[in-house]
Length: 304
Image 1 (cartoon, rainbow, N blue to C red):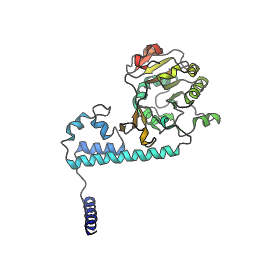
Image 2: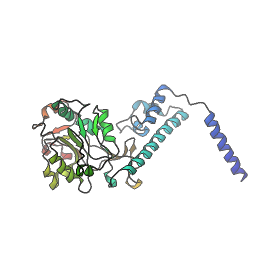
Image 3: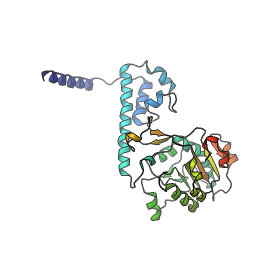
Image 4: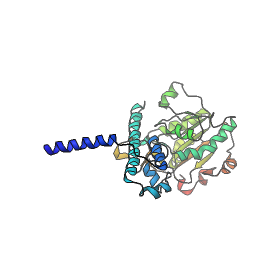
């Protein structure tokens, strides 16, 4: 008992000394890194140190082992806190959803999917005498709000992607004003069929991010895409932290959540009735993703 009391007193004294100690003086590069980790700017520490990840920081990797132990601990602590904050926010978001959702439907599209679509959205904006800031984009399926964050990073400001039940919105006639539908729908149940039926009746351009197997389904005949925007590298999707149980989580976790990539996917695009001819020549001048006039033109690994 006496030993336990001594240990307890020692822990309290150590904690008190730590709190009283002056703040760790960090070099400018490490101070900037800590600030980015604390605010969620860029990738997690794991992303930055892993050469296979988009956020890899070669300079940080090169100097990591040479940093002092306390500096590394300080950086890791900032990263750990941010990840916990994201998990807590994910749990709150999941609890607030006004609809039932299958756990596997909790997936956000990656930032690069919207970057691949930006040239198409620019064409739509120009045809309407708008620009990125004024083009009205509607994504009817809400997950955690990443859609709006990714699009705003590209300069698109008017995005309607709200925490609401799309089907209730349709039934009550509360469809928001929009110029184009841009969405990655849930794939369970009959969500895809209902979305395709909506797009067929909506008389607005649409860009639908769908798995490659969807074109084999009977309901695919409801729409007539003018062209397809296919990534050069297969998209990963991200389940926000705390949206699924541990048994469903993938191995890699980043600031975007848990990574999954169960199938090839690409954008199915129609700009009709605004534009009846696909602007493929103009789009291909931008480079970037594959712009294909038909499914047969898609890369072999992406076809139905």
